[in-house]
Image 1: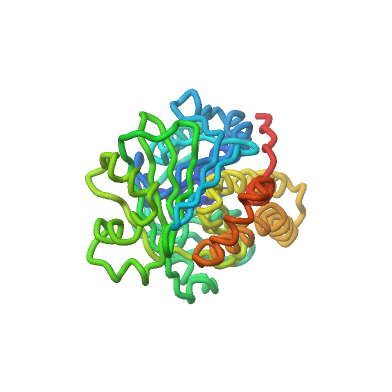
Image 2: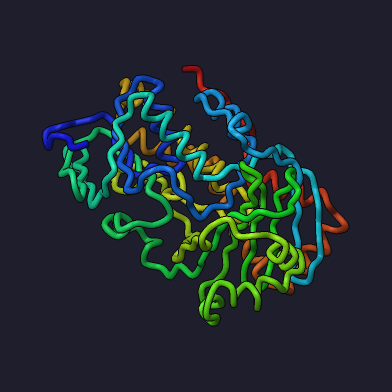
Length: 382
């Protein structure tokens, strides 16, 4: 769809991933006119752990999304292994579910369209803020103005360069690889298998598929000629991963990969744009809660945008301050904890000490899980 260059809308959302779609649906169900700009078409697979904490389940249900009725797999147990093949098991305090981004994003996109959101496939090339309005410029459809802009365009973008965000200047040394497989893996388990220089998340998703997604230091990876070579020489030193890969069959034509992943601390508001999802900040996949955080952040931002548009929040400065405080209050401790855990597990000697401690004091593991997760979100009354 092409809009008029004179067109003005209350809210423009840049990016149609989890955070963008959920915030668009939330706002639309509350009667807010929204335009969502996404560069890709649905459905599509994404590099993602595809495990979601049950903390967001009541909220999703209130938006008309019931993952378990759609084929998502209920998960209640957690398994952790080290490169030296030590193993820990525990129950997840809240539990969660496994569901592919292919299915979840596509379902959300259809819900968003049915709710009356104008969805445009395009690329945003710049956003300018002037006179308390935003001028949003796109590659193919010209430009339009907006009262509010939400940034939900993912881990990194050329927009981050435009906005001069500090993290974009730093090296991003991580690479992630993901694919679906068919094979044998417990339906009620999410596993994190540590290997030298990285770790791998495993869980079931819909259609009896196993999602396997690992993240590693790019410097380590580039020493090898290919993904299979790296897996054979490094990943398979973890016996649990070796057995899983050897007894499973690839369900994709080839694995998906992304590079330049940054876990630097970001600001939730940049150039007056309210950032959510990975655009606001990423927790290490080791914690298994990135998707939950994206959905939760969409709820936070939506619940502040509505009173701002209604005049209940009197100024943009108040809106930005309240959102920054809400984001930091809910997520900053989680992100920092995740970063610390990743540093521990990327150090083989330290990870052995940690695992030994957790063996004797298993309740500490439960406390760590709780520290990287939140309480169940309240449903939205539509």
